Amino acid sequence: LRCMAGALLYLAAIARGAAGMASPGTRTHVIKSAVEHFRPPNPRGLPRSSAKTPTLSPALHRLHRISRHVFGALAAYELTPSGTLFSQNNLSRRHVSSSARAEEKDSGWESGLREAARSIFRSACEAVDPINAVERALLGTDTTKLVVHGNTVADLGEFESIHVLAFGKASIGMAKGILHAIGSKIDESVVVTKEIPEQGDGLPSQFSVLLGKHPTPDKSSVDATQSVLTLAQMAKSRDLVIVCISGGGSSLLCAPRNGVSLEEMQQVTKDLLASGCTIQEKNAVLKHLSRVKGGQLRASIYPATCVSLVLSDVVGDPLDTIASGPTVGDRSSIRECMDIVEKYRMYNRLPKSIQACLALDAKETPKPGDPMFAKDVVAVIANNRLAVSAAASKAKSLGYTPLVLGSHIEGDALEVATVMSGIAKSLRKDGIPIKPPVAVICGGETTMTLPPVPGLGGRNQALALRAMKEIDGLEHVCILSGGTDGGDGPGNDSAGAVVTGHDYQRALRAGLDYNAALSGADSYNFFKAYEHEVWGRANVMHLRDGPTGTNVMDIMLILVQQQQ
Image 1 (cartoon, rainbow, N blue to C red):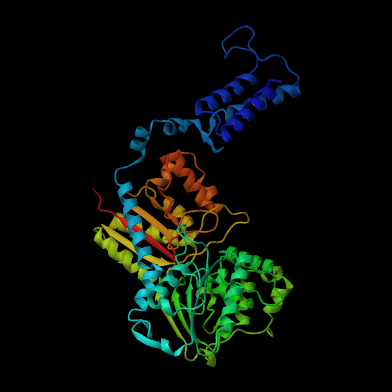
Image 2: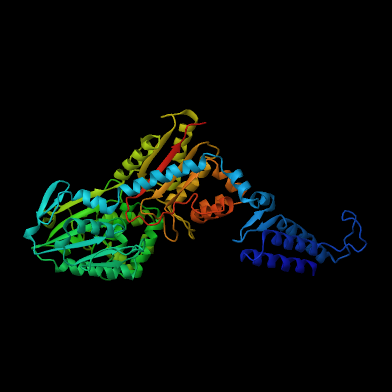
């Protein structure tokens, strides 16, 4: 009975703690009361060391002994309002006053270093703002001529109608840039985006702004794409169609081939994202399941004139991969798609309809050299290289020597984190290849292989989480990884994270389960709990500036200050 009473009291403590209804002191008191209730009675009032356990049956005696061990272990722990168990050995660290807590946590250099890293990251994102990118690319354009990168590509007076088709995370900004350049000439147009800013899209009535889903398409993506195709097919030989393409367009522009259902397209997209395949491999497969990707949108626009402006979110700017190349010839083949799904052991799980699309005798996508592409203009107006360059300029203005490693970083996020951490150690300990203060800047896009039931957080937060342990103990060092679109995987509001050489030990002292977060792909919840338990406020490690309206992959950064 005493064992049962103790168990019930402890369960009550769990319920109250998880709901945040009890103070830390109250929860600790209830747990201690539970321990007292299961202890054997002491009728003679003897000291505990000399009190004898009353006579029990062998079975009850074993139960009692086991219960003492269980409750003794539980008594050493206490619940946070979130329901997480923490060792009471750490309670003094977590329940001190805010001023004492700040003194224990802030080493004096970390807050300034984190803010410098954030400032450099923001500068990179601002440099690839889509409105500015379009206006730079179209410098010299007026109501009579269309100029792209200094070259006149079209006499606007020759066209009966001018339409804009924009899709991707930067579609609203790119459409605004076109509007600023030739606004009065634009006729009916369609914009497909992931989300509309709180202040509205700011576009005139001839622009139909539609929502789609990213990173996995849904019915809204299909409906929006049908509007794009309808307008494309209406274009005549004396019309001009300006297509604005940006990252995310592969999901937002979704039109499954006949026989393939939306649900099947959603599942194969999820499987590809979880497989760890590259964006090039993912898009190659999706192009062959679509009626609009891989040059097929251009086929719908033909014979109208087509000019494509591209904001690149793919390493190396391959035009047939960005948003799955809807207006350019497709270099991938069905045979390559078969190799990809077999490489990641997906083929046997594919529905019959998708297997039919990947059969060797299935319809191929339009290829480079097709006559319909002959007079087209396709221009990359912003990319990761531009963002990296802007980050280097900002770092220099803050007093750091910039060391740019380029914009072609790919591979597993955790492995990239290990390499970046090794560079940080070399800079800190040996001053090689440059003596601090130094900012190592690079860009690209890493990948993740997800567990069966992943938590929250994308590749950038995973990279930062691994780096946090790798740079443990390094003074005046931080590593940042962030997505230029302001997001990092579905279901969370962070673009990435910034960590220092002191963060790992703090996490251990707070009782956070680092290994579980890393293996469970739950970096977002780990950093969120860390900020709450250690700092008492949000947005210390997370990069939460909100959607940027652009997308040129990721920025990765190492900052090493001069040692005081």
